[in-house]
Image (cartoon, rainbow, N blue to C red; front, side, top):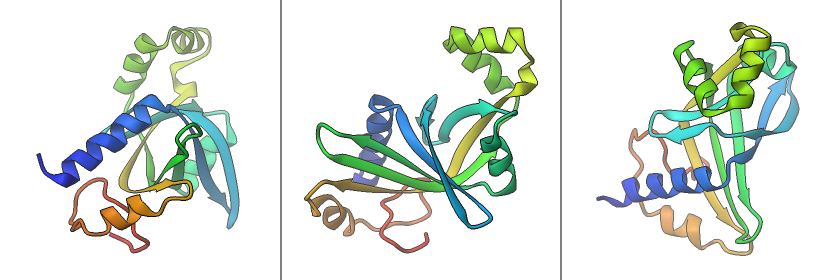
Length: 157
């Protein structure tokens, strides 16, 4: 297994073990941020949901560029991910409803169309540790090609 694959797997494991993240969007060049809960993350993208009635849904439809910040306060590790949040097809809603009974109840009570599922893709990631610049220095030596998620070093991939 190569170093890039190991790093991606480590990032996915970190996201899964720290499922609460902060999601930043922009409306008319004004920042918006809120806490969210991760549904799933793998090489295909990072999945989360919201209600179609919320302003977040409208913001993502207007401008899908987002940044997510996952944080481990105990170890002082932060993973920031930039990408595009795109609406997912309906089959994901049924899968999510089976995994989360409370979500299934919302869908049954209201309407499946009130659930908006998003996949963040075209991602870059930056791993940062409090008072430690070791991780970015270590990862800057890895050649970044067109992999799905790579160490973000300030330049567009």
